Image (cartoon, each protein chain N blue to C red):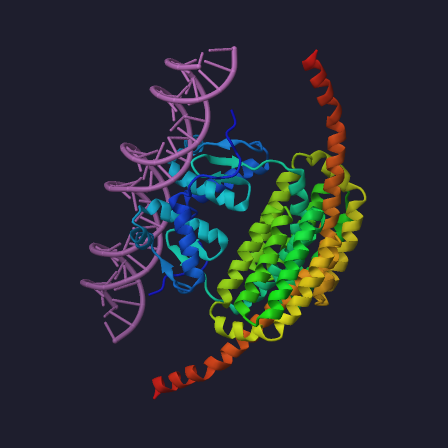
Length: 246
Length: 246
DNA sequence: AGAGGCATTATTATCGATAATTTTATTTTT
DNA sequence: AAAAATAAAATTATCGATAATAATGCCTCT
């Protein structure tokens, strides 16, 4: 009678493929903030009708990168300094929830795997100053915790907020990498260690606090990068304006 | 050149109307958990084509009450004791973020209005034992804080989680009202007072903690109601099963 | 010249029909 | 009778076309 409600293993439908590609395009700033996207344009690009495009728009809008307004279409969201604070606060809170739940949900076996990954992470930290690799391996730990927290809704919201954060600082990527590379890495390493220890010790409150501190490092790096970006771009703009009025 | 990206003031399109009504139906348990909903069925009910129904399904799915799986359709989510913990943890965290941000964002005027509402709330608490009215006025305070926190994304996620929580305990509504009415009201009142005081004092950490404690009261009431519900329904089921096997 | 109204154009929303896929029922085989 | 294969039915996904709406440019009037 009831159909199989289980997990989806079939090939993805077109709307999901398109949504994925749109997300990539927006996060990578190939589509600028505030841009107005037309159905026909995207439909032509993927050689499909507009129906799947509409659904893709809705999916991207649900993640928060697109804003769909009736009869007017879809707009990429705008960059907003104030919203950055909100995103990072949410990120801290949601990652905290994931870690808190992980304390209760993780098996002892998962805990051992977590500590194993921590060792791997510290190795990378000591071996290289490559910030990309650094971010990569640290993200792996975060995702592992979130997955094992057995909290699908928290995981979904976490992915969403992390995506928004990534989009936000992709403008400042260069500054970010430079800034984050030096001292933040060491602080992160220490915080990851305390976080993992609290999780295997099943201390939810302490894990939550460590998680918040960890995202806080990223937040500080972002803010610092933003300042540097502003400082770098303050002069060119002023000169351009002067040239205009001359 | 660029179109009006501002707020939406036009009449809602059909898909949004349908989505709203579907949400109501699901939250009120007029559509049972796990139910499989067909496009044609809903389309016939609202005398529309299936296109707006599809979009409505996607919107409800984004809130989390519906799960859309390719080629198989839309299913109402299932009741899951484990998921309840997750929802309440998220609720605590998100309301905490809203209160934290409210500390920074609220004007002094907003703070005075908040304290005014607190007085109103305490009056209601003293005057009546009516739990509905009690929940109503307390929700008003929560929503006021969330709105003035100037954090649209947090507000959206908060609404979403609160809706899921409401759906979850709508099964046990009767027990919930009974349980919540007695002692929890007094605890909530004290916690609301400390929360508001921390907010006007702009102490983010303290406000966050108070917010968590406040949702914690609701969580405890829910869990207690769940226990009572289980106890009440344990016997009838057993007898029914015995009758079947006889 | 500028403001306001009107027609034009472009775009989204909805519809009805067809294609692709899954589920259910039937038949066949062992 | 049970299991596998097959056919039938039901359902979703996609398409192309039409209706509804918003933005744009033109024209008139002052």
